[in-house]
Each structure stands twice: as C-alpha cells, then as structure tokens.
Image 1 (cartoon, rainbow, N blue to C red):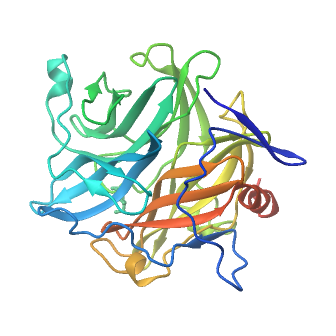
Image 2: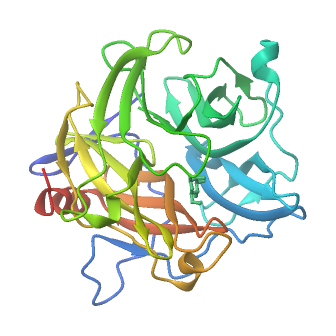
Image 3: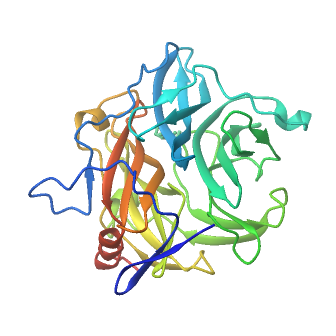
Length: 339
Ligand code: BMA
C-alpha cells in the first residue's frame, strides 16, 4: 500500500517510509542538489569470484532491508543478472550464481544475455525489466516475490529496445512503462517513449515523451536519452531521473539529469533539467571498461524526509551511490528547465 506524505507546505511525496535509507549528509560547501557518497564505489568490480564488473544495477526495499538485481559481467565478458541482498543498502551480498528465470514459453526462456535491470514493486510483486537478448536487445520482464524464484513473462516489445522502466502503480488501470527504441549496437540516437499494458503481455498506447535536447541548449543530453530509475510520484508530477549522452571527440559521455512528468498522462513533460545532476568527474567514473559513464538504474527514497539515494553504474565497471533531497531536485528541475 502506498502512503502519501506531506513533506513541505507545497510538496507531497507518495511512497512507503524508509527510515533506514542509506544516507550521508551533504558535504560542507556543496551547493549541488545531488552529491556522491564519500565511500564510493559501494560495489567493487570483483565482488564475485567470476565478475569482471558489477554496475547498472537495481535495488529496492525488501523485508525491512534491501534486495536487488545486479548486472554482473563475467570474465568471459558475458552480461548476466544476479540477485543480491543487503541490510544497509551499502554492503551487498550478491549470489555468485546467475538468476535462472522460470519460464514456460520456450521461445522466451532461451537465455541469450541480460543487462541494465530495473526493479519496481507494484501491488504485491516485484517486477524486473532488463535489456534482454532476443534477436537483438529488447525489454525482458519477470516478477518475483522473494528474489529467489523469478517468473519470466513475454518480452514487452519487439527488438530493438533498451531502458525499459515501469511505473510503480498502474496508470488508467494499466501497467505503464518507459522505454527507448534503439538498434543492435551502440545506438547513436534515442528518444524516450511511454507504453501501457492491461496484462503485461500486450503493450500499446505508445506515446512520445522526450527527444534528445539540441546541442546548443543542453549538450550533455544531445545525442540520446533513456529513463533511469523508477519514477517517483509527487504532487508536482513524476520525478524521473534519466541519462543523457554527449558525443565528444573522445567518445560517448553519459551523465544524468531530471524531469517532471504529468501524473496521469506521463508522456507529457512538465519540466526538464538543462543542467546535469551528475556527470563523470571522479576517477571511478572517468576510468574503467567504458570511460566517462554515469548510468543510474535505481533509487531508494524516504517520503517523510525527502531523502533519495541514487544507484548508478560508474564507467561500466563498479556501482556508485549519490544522495539528495527530492524537494531540491524538483526545484533544480524547474530552475534549469529547458522547455
Ligand atoms: C549503453 C548500455 C549501458 C552502458 C552504456 C555505456 O548502450 O550498454 O549498459 O552503460 O552503453 O557503455
């Protein structure tokens, strides 16, 4: 059940209280709406005996603690998904065995690869979406109640698609998802779209949400964009953290910013940050298997205080954590709005 919390005179945040959210206060002198955890990265690349890298991963509150689905590329450099658990959201116990999805649809059950998972709780189930190999990348969907058994359903879309992110409640009585149609490779374009499904099998009602921004307006998001963590419902709209990509003379640079989407028609964008929240700056973001990547896939938040903890992949190698206050991020989104 969702609860609604009045946090400031003019802002309500919808969600369950999370007093045990991982947290560190804003460093002295920091004026930015989001700051990095001083002990980053929280998940090292070699946490598992066979892992080459652990990044772009999704966590949720679970039974008074935390659980998640982690992108672990192994030392064959295969992209695999693993379940993990944590008492504090910072120290993670990730299963060395990959998730074996249970699936009674033979065409869907055949595992090719999986990466960049998101996890969302809707009613009594946790839904996992990820970039699933099926004649190219598309959006795989599964659900679990215990993070031990995962039930895989039909892929949501035709290939090629990435960054499938579901909303935490049904909209107009249907499941709702953001996604980013793409190609087979390192897609050099990409807009965010919205789709709905009555049954998690048939998706339609496709709507355009956002395109990359013009280079002269907001260069960090001028080549492609994709939804990041599960959107957070507030009285100001859905707060969406999303990644944007700049094509520099040295390759792609992945940063992230924020947008507000209409609560009942989430394809309508209310505001969109012209500035980034986080761009690669630290050594662990600038150096790794893919340099200069900050790729957010999850957030935890406490509606009573407005605290948010954002999990993001760093340089396709390790996982970092950043903190902020939802009210500050909303103000930032409006203050730097490019619409
Ligand atoms: C994207 C995805 C992400 C990755 C990013 C940077 O296309 O593959 O998993 O973090 O590229 O390499």
